[in-house]
View 1 (cartoon, helix red, strand yellow):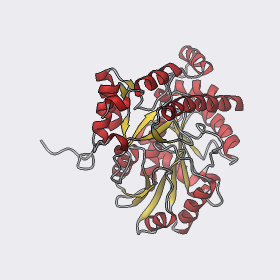
View 2: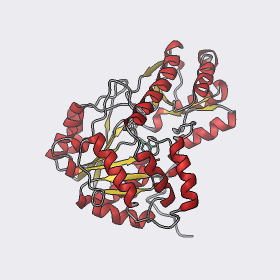
View 3: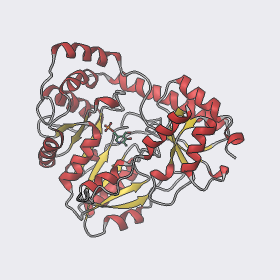
View 4: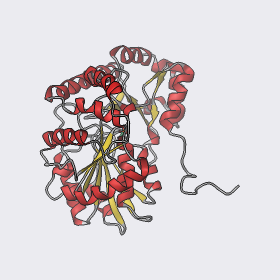
Length: 387
Ligand SMILES: Cc1ncc(COP(=O)(O)O)c(C=O)c1O
């Protein structure tokens, strides 16, 4: 048999999904894979029932149903302050996962370089490989996860750099980039003529006083920013696979074509039902923030009471905990032991870092109170069981 593609030969099984299997094996409370264990808003699921009876059940317009794009443009205009044309500046995709892939394929030629902050969401590695690009990593340094502007400039000025990927708010480190930090990135992007591909799936999951600033809203950035975003986290519907790209008409025109060949379109009945969510008023997003703030305070408050060391997230729903005190050389072995001996599933931090970082593990806390309290109960024994 001839060899399978060289491009994908280096792909490994996702460490996150591996930790889910390990959690299941030991009956551990799974705080590794990031999805909520509570229900989406009732209005959206009620609407889905109606749509099941009424339709649509056939292909929607390839770049997204008209009413979905109109509701989305209105919602994003409201939060970002930018004018968004639903016909020429939006492509609806199968999750932000497809949005990112379509954006990368639209921008990159084989051999182009893409700057990625490390730690990073694991898909970006695969996105660069599939689009033929080569990643250049710039560290966000723990525990505060700040970047060094000179280091960033050294990366961005390299020959062949086409784009920078910005995850804000960030998974896994919970960083919310300030306006000032975004301005530094924006100035370099303009100086070296680089696209910024943003992943803003956690735009509404923020902890006060942090605020989300849209990269595209900074002066001169609208035309060079490709926003990848999703309904997965905002409406707790990760399984619906609804995402989107927002960019200038020139870029969107290309993304539409890539998207058409990748997937044809997002699911028509789910788009129709999700329009209900896109039309929610401000109180929904305030409620979402309050709910996440409650879960965050419950979980990190518990870690604090146990005297564990971690970086408090500014946004998204993950916390990176420092495991140096346990003396493990491998964070992967630590996570396997944690699932087996303590009964809590986490992700080894090394799977997110390019640098040699082995002293962090990631928990996610988009869980019901009972789940988090049980996990904290189990973690109370961590020092007894993990030495
Ligand atoms: C940073 C980030 N981007 C994208 C995704 C995937 O989003 P979607 O469900 O829209 O494909 C996730 C999911 O965990 C994520 O954490």
